[in-house]
Image (cartoon, rainbow, N blue to C red):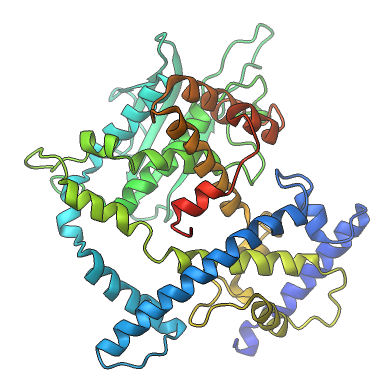
Length: 432
């Protein structure tokens, strides 16, 4: 465990105690009750209902995955026991043997230029947006491209900046932000103030062409989904516009957009070899798609365990004398954590919970959004066309444009015609 000078468990207990006091001052018995009241879930019970429904099939899948890794280890003369430190090593060996996917073969079909064309094309076919490069508009760095965004009527609805490359002193990761959010509140006659939206990525710049992994392509579409949330916003007041929504809704627009990069219809058109312009071979594409479900049991368990521990921690009403190490161990034993897997974030470094209160009793939101995005995309599938206009119009109105101007669950029901169902997400992950 931690050396004394880096042991922040006592700080974590102090934080938990202060949160408990805060909840009680507001009339709630626990911080979990207090924190979830202003979410789509509304109660800890609803959160646990979701997490427990995912936990059981995820454990089953993870145990089967461990058996496969164990068999591989034995086949090369190693121990059958798969420790947490072994899991990813053997996983990569099995993945390579099963799918024979080599990035040097896959990446040439996913150039950055082509994938940007793909995401713009999807946005046009779904929501009528057009992106015109404006080289006359100079950004803060030569790599940053500026686009003027117009709708089907030719009206300018946004400016979009694409900052795709890693460079010195740039933050790591990928994110969307806004230099200005949309509103109609700058004067007395409702004049529209268009948003200025930016997507930041950290792709390695290639010469002469930047080639992406498929995971990079998913990231590109994901952040662009956040960007659409800003560009399609239709609110009077800036404070209610764009991504100013509940934290268990904010990932829906981005994760929903990811689905289109996985569609053969989109990839057949845009995934083309950067030198020959040949479309990606069907057999190679099938391998890429099949590999997406590889080790989903493991990934779901290591995440969901964290979310369940988070809920258990913040359900405690009195933390005096709490031993967090013992609590973590006991909670995982009660959950029957599969052997060979550890929490993605152990309590001492669980910054989502303790760096601020934003995700405290709220780490579940990523999974909640996955339920929503899988169920939402199923609406397009059920319509028989992934670009179905009526479904896209509803998605635009109730998911991308509404901001926080209406109850978000009510908005989802207006889009889908019912409450979200979990089954589509379990199928997407290959857990059923």
